[in-house]
Length: 267
Image (tube, rainbow, N blue to C red; front, side, top):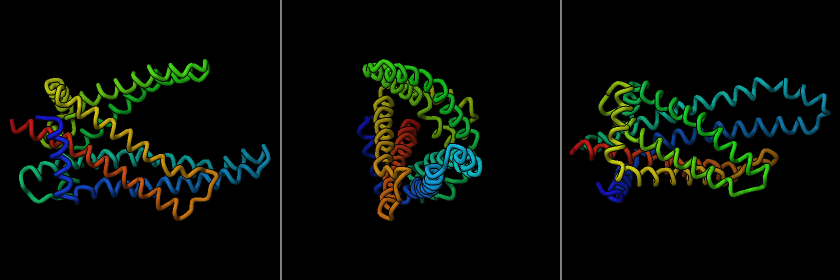
């Protein structure tokens, strides 16, 4: 299937069924709310620390440590929510493909039922970060200590190549796991085989999706509500709007691979 056709038809799907945006928008609002609370806590703790003596700093940290750790511990919960939302889209695309009314409740139930698939995918992504990050960190550290910014080029190339290879291998994991309801290991094997077989079509989609992810992350840094400034209502509104814009990009990415899988499945 032609790369541009997949992207165009996926965009057309979103245009025809705007309710598909709802799961990611809900997740984005939760993220925005949590991060605003975390920013508020950070500002309050920092203000207290700036007005303390060196001895008082330890007391401030000790008195707020549980609050800080509790806030940071919420990130794994948000990551699980992200995976569940991502797992909803194969069911949504399947309903659309079979000309059925799209049911978000049904999609959520399918995602929860396939918890082994998205949990395994999450662990694979975590392991990937634990393996790749140290290699990138070494090159970044050497670049910083030696002043040789050229070292950042191989670091970026290694990271991007690793991301693209990983995405090729797991590109079809969620559609296969949700639609076919296969076992976890077999789902990953089948995803790898399909990604390898259709690499000419999958590779440009993966590259395009990776670019969109980096774009979404870049957009997410635009508000830059610093930990020393007052978060005004305008800044908060902008922050939430940016998170919602991110969610629109993530929704598009979430639709592309199940749509492509459905076309392959037809053949």
